[in-house]
Image (cartoon, rainbow over all chains, first blue to last red; front, side, top):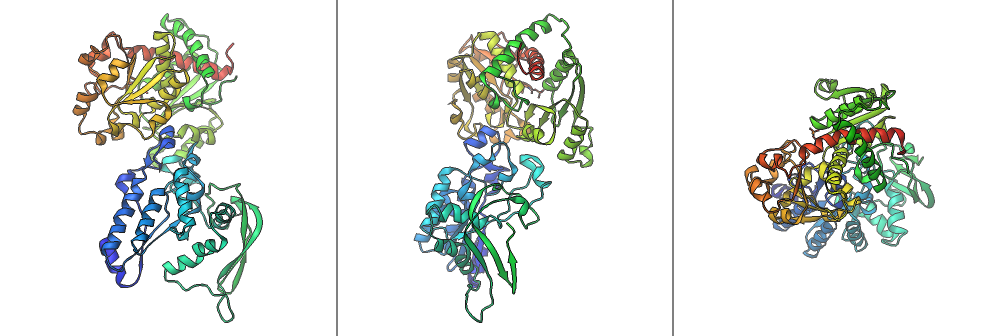
Length: 265
Length: 306
Ligand SMILES: NC(=O)OP(=O)(O)O
């Protein structure tokens, strides 16, 4: 990691890390805690994520001008580490997925493989700290960790089924419903975290809506109330734990490369 | 109240379900020990013992109970099956489903596989051990054995010793014993104790001598070397030294009763002397295992106890 940070610091690039110590995860398949104990399932401890983040923050401090981005934060403790890195003025950023601020390891009960993802769903305590981090902009990015798998793959039992869920179709509705409507963040913060900040971190051009620019944006219908229906997803896979969720705010259409794509959600 | 369609775990049973099973177990136990034939009340039913993991006691006692009750009983074991040709678990199960068994008794290394079977078949499912989750018939026979010996489980002090984190037997015992108001504890090195186990209402002992002195029963679990338990210990000899239930340690509480689900690692978690001592109920457990399974099929078939 030291060498990667050194190399990328020179070309103003960012290192984006899936923070996991595999020896601490040790073939675990869900959050290690009370629920995994009740289910008799091997757990992934919080320290598997936080130990890597803590080390990498120190490395980012050690390597001048390096930039580091924490993928899909699942633990409350990770938010605290990110906050402390920012207070040290380090170039460290982080992201979170909707499932990590909405669902908990209780959703794995009855061995539902649609609730099996890595990093795993954690606890209500973690959600609380993640929400605080979203509110105070410690967490600057909301992402999906979109991980499509076929029904057949996801039907191999709780150990052998792969980790992951799809998130593209549900990200907007879930974020608006669970963060904006509840007053955790403003709608402007939502746009920052889902469009502006990711582009800044990745050195991509920002979207400008004005004459002469090529149109690349999504139009949202803020008032549309809809029910998540996995059979309507455009993705080839529809492995989601959010089927049937009632949400508000719907992508109305996407404009990209001179084409308009209307949502069929 | 009706008995559930499937036996997935003792987590899902009520105290009433347990009492109903134990009443019938007593009836079958008497018949079995006096070698009386049983009424073939399930002679129109078929069952497959679907064992993806090895077994001596569980598979044999299931088959015996099934045959005593007149069922068409078929055995499947992973070795010798088309799994070796790369057939998947799901396809294997779909084929079993196509044969329309009334009951499927399943053992597999993955937790949750019994739930999974209920989603992919129309048979009644009995969990014979799903990885590190539950082993409900073991829990039932352990608890029945204690009931037979002590009369009531209420306030009985039962300590489960050893490799808790790899043990389906531990979880089934904890769920069942708590429902019958026993005081349950576990004892072992922290590397063997799963996180938040106290949340299940059990105490944790780290000193085996203290645990022996303070309990009426030690239910000793095997150190599951096949699930890589060895990597959680400096050595099995060290485990024996600090946590083994041995002849010398029995002297700390001469009235203590000993359970072990088998298979035993002699001189790891238990010594030979203890296993055959007057304190030991280990072989009584095996007899009760047959009676419990007869009672279970009877109840699942009848739904209500008459
Ligand atoms: N107690 C027990 O389950 O033994 P087997 O593995 O031999 O069935």
